Image (cartoon, rainbow, N blue to C red; front, side, top):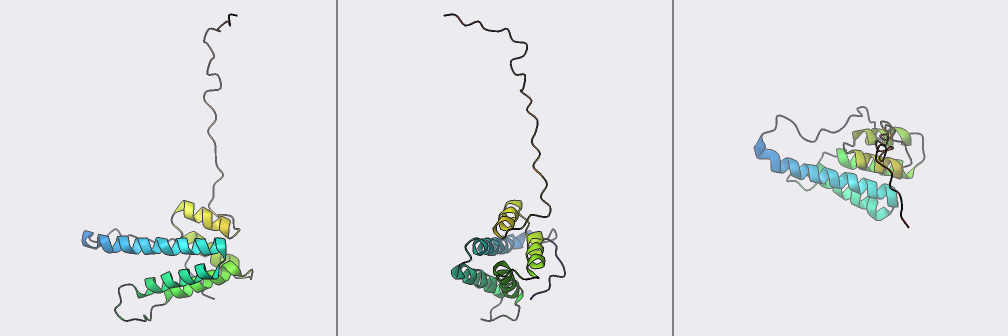
Length: 149
């Protein structure tokens, strides 16, 4: 299993990046989002086809920007394999792996959906606070209407 020593959100856009690389960054953002959505889909369906899709996207991410067919960089492939095993397995390392991945998801809706799909509570989920109704006395002070028959 992969050790998740640093559980911090991925920063997808560096503030110091020149505008000429904006298209490249958008492409990386799209493929990262596709990977995260593929993991969510696998967590929901537990289908082997969806697991293979996760691994294919991870391989594309690892190979991104490299000319050779097989890259030595295997971060996303290793992480994807570990995540898929953790989603399927109920072992002792499951909570650590899934909560670390959950902490790295930047989008709140995706984070909530993944947490629900794997049966975890979102760690930073604040209870929903509803505003008190302000129109409780909406008709207070108005003259009453008398109904005529």
